[in-house]
Each structure stands twice: as C-alpha cells, then as structure tokens.
Amino acid sequence: MNVLTLEVLWNRLLSVVNEQQVTLMRTAFSTVVRESQDLACGVFDSRGYMVAQSLTGTPGHINAMATGVRHFLKAIPPATLAPGDVLITNDPWLTAGQINDMTVLTPVFFEDRVIGYFASCCHSPDVGGRVYGAAATEVYEEGIRIPIMHLFRKGEPNADLLALIRANVRVPEETIGDLYAQAASNDVGARDLARFLEEFGLHEIDDLGDAIIERSERAMRDAIAALPDGAYRAENWADGFDDQPVHIVVTVTIAGDEVTMDFAGSSEQMANGLNVVLNYTHAYASFAMKAAVNPEVPHNDGAFRPVHVTAPEGSIFNCREPAAVAARHLMGHMIPATVYAALVQAMPGRLMAGGSDALWLTVWRGTWPGSNRLFTFSNFQSGGAGARADKDGLQTNGYPSGVAGVPAEVVETWAPLVMHRKALVTDSGGAGRARGGLSQEAEISYRGDGRWGVSTLIERTRFPGNGLAGGRPGSLGRFQLASGEKPPPKRLVPLPRDARVQLVLPGGGGYGDPRERAPDKVLQDVVNGYVSLEAAEREYGVRVRYIGGPERLVRLPEHYVIEPDG
Image (cartoon, rainbow, N blue to C red; front, side, top):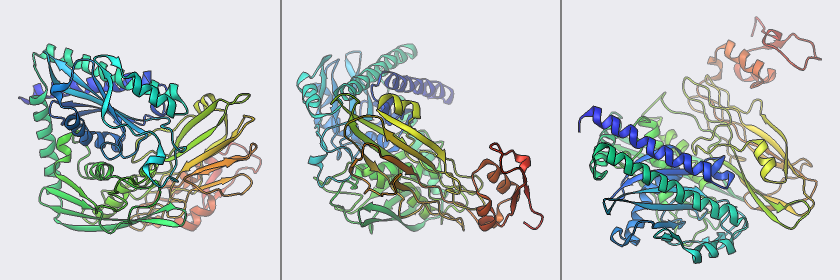
C-alpha cells in the first residue's frame, strides 16, 4: 500500500471513529459522558486488534478496551453473531477495571460477514451497590456486575437485562440512556465504515489495519531503541485509605526495542476499593511509555506490542478477585508520574514533574427539594499538572486521564447544589525554573430540604506531586467543611443540611531550580495572581512591590515593579 493511499485511508478512518464519538456525546443522558467525556471509542478489525481510536478517550478506557475486546470474541465467537447484535460487560477483570465502566461492542457486518467491531467504554452514572467510593471490601458490594452477554439480539433489546439494571440503580433513565447512546454511536460507526469500504472498493479492514498497526509498531520500537538500555527504578506514595498509604514502585527495563515495566515492590492489595486489575495497570503504564517516547505514534494495537507490563499477583496493581476495585483510578492515575520519575534517568530534560495526577471525583447524593426523589451527581475536577523542563505546568489540567471538569452551570442545573466559589489557588504550583500548574478550589452547598451527602474520591492530601531537577513539590489537596471539620475521604459522608463543602485540589510540581526562573516571569506570575508577593521573594528570590492603591479591586501590570535589589 503506497504512502499517499494509506494516508487518505487513515484519515478517513479517523473521521469515522470521531463521528462515533460525537454521536455518543450528543446522545448521552449523563453529564459524565456528555460534559466530562469519561469515555473511549474505537474501531477493531475482525481479529479484535484496535486499529484506531477517536479524538478523545481516557487511557484507562481506550487501552483497557483494546485488550478487552478479545475477551468478547472468546466468550461469544463471531460465527454466532447476527446483524443487530450488541454485546456488553462491565466485568473489571476483562475491561476497564471497575464495574462503573460499561463496555459495549457491536460487530460490523459487510457482505454478509463480520469484518470488524466498534466499541465504546463509558463511566456509568450509577451501578447500584454502595454510593461510588472506596469503602467496599469486595467487588460484590460495589454494584451490579454484568458478564459478557447480549445487550441487543438482532436489533431487539435484552429486556430482562435492562429490567435488572433498572431495578439496581438510583438513576435508571441516565444509566439506561447512556447504554442506548453507546449502542447508537457504534451503529453510526458501522454505517460510516460500510460507506467508507464501498467508496474505496475494499472488502474488509484487516489489510488496512495491518498496514497501520505495523507502521505504529515500527515507530514505537525505533523510539524505544533510541534510549539507553538499562533498568531504571522509581518510587511514589499515595494517600491510600485511612491510615494505610500506598507505596508505588516501578522498574522500567529497556532492552533494545522493547520495554518492560514491573511494579514488584508496590503495596499488597488492600481491603478497600483502591485495588487495580492488571488490565488497567497495563493501560496507564503503556500510555505513559507512548507519551514519553513517541506521542505522535497513532494509538492502536501496534503501539502496545513492544511494551510489557507485569505486577505480582495479589499486589495493588494486579489484584485477585473478588477484590474491591471501584476507586482503582486513584492508583492508576499515579502510574505515569512514577514511570516518568524512572525514565528521567534515561531521558533527562524531556519529561514532566509530578502533578495532582489522580482525578478528583466527588459523588453527591441526596433528594430533590420538595420530594423524596433521589439524585446522584458525579462532579469531576482536576488539580495542577507538573512542569516540563522548558514549560510551566498546565492549570487545573486533567492529566493523565483527559477527563474534563463539569461547568458550575451544569452542576447547578442537574443537581440541587450551589457552587459558591470556583477559583485558582495562589502558590499551589511548585516553584521551579518552570513552575508547576495551579490547582483550583471550590465551595459547594445543598439547596434542598432533605438528606444529602458526598463521597470524595481524592488523592494527594498527604503526599504531594514531586518536582524534578530541583523543582519544589506541588501543594497538597484539602477536603473540609466551612466549619473547619475534616470528614474522612473516599466514602459516603452524610452532611448537615446547611454545610458548605470546601474542596482544594493539589498543585503540580516544579521543574529545575526556582532561582533560575527569569525575574520577568516571576513578575508576570505575581500580576496574574499565580504567585504571591511573599512566595516570589521566598522561593524565587525576586522582590516584587505593589505600587497601586490598597483600595483597587483591579490591579494592573503597571501596579507592580521588581525591586532593584531583587
């Protein structure tokens, strides 16, 4: 296949999966999918190899889905499928590591045979069981678990399964609506793929998939081979659960054009929902390697083949059934920063410092004003990202998950909540030649007259994101009430009706010696409110003075000067 033809076909295939994603987001019922984009979409060839993914998609979903599709094909052989069939599972050990993630797979029939598959994986707004948190001690407590089965048969919905789901979740319209949206988006992908094949006179996508996958694999192997061989080790710490912190250890071994990431030495699996299945560990570790060595490589099966991930069975990163796994993302999101801390020894000046890493997810539960009708609302927020060698960290950035935050207007529309404050946190970015990204803070209350509560899936309240090459760590996160009370995180906490919940997220680590930061950049940070006058002098050695009037609400750049001896 010549290069020009391949480029045309590749871009057309991307447009097909992007149309799949757009359909999913525009037809989804929950804000989790529609606003936060906690999803993944992809197209697979007849053998179950991922050929392409859509424009967005969290690594924990898309990479886990890439390996999970083969479980579908093993459980329900393609020869038994018919047009209109749609399959589903949320088994954590087969796909994305928690039962909140629903994977829906649709076979593509063309010329009377299965020539490929479209799949999507979305975080469901509710799956029953406990309100989403980390307090469960086994997976059976965490909600309804669906083995691989039919969601539709020959176009007809599996009424028994849908009735079972409805009876077990708190928001059945949103949960079932999202499943229909997933099936619809897969149908759109299948329709567009058929048009694509007809337009170019193709009869299947396996040959095209092979060409794309082989080139991706070759590019990934070349990038790995350019690194010095060796074994590189790093450690990290996470808050964990109650008084049990989690120790994260990785050894990255580069040998020729292949790499192995081994998590031996990490904590044992825990008696709560922080455990990670190996499939999810592989998802974030392989993402980290690709992002580090060759982010431009198309994301498909070929990018995974030179990357191997291992963890001892029974450890936090390869838990045994029936371990609780609902909050597995809190540990999984720590993997890239730990891998980078190891790889920095082989790739100096090319990687980013530690950041807030784990996405903050607060799940709000209560009743609507004037009724006993339940609401369950998931609010996503992000802290600061780590700095790079020559660039400041991004503010309130959802790295590495890619999940977007929920606008205040959406929070207040879809739940009886009031967002009193949402702002960047001054001095939250770790000092460095390149400054860490700032975090955010929010204050939320309830406008109802019934019971309410919140489950906070949060991290980095005890162990900050580390700086690199002399950079300072980012700030710690904080969860408390306006009264000063500090409820326990990672579980459902009942709240007084008039309580105001304060969430202060962690900041990103800095990169390089802060005293090497250009004074004019420090001045600009002070003007923007990113760095205080005190921190400018203390951390950066730059004395900035405010010369405007104390009564001014708007303070302009000309109201600040650098002292000559600063």
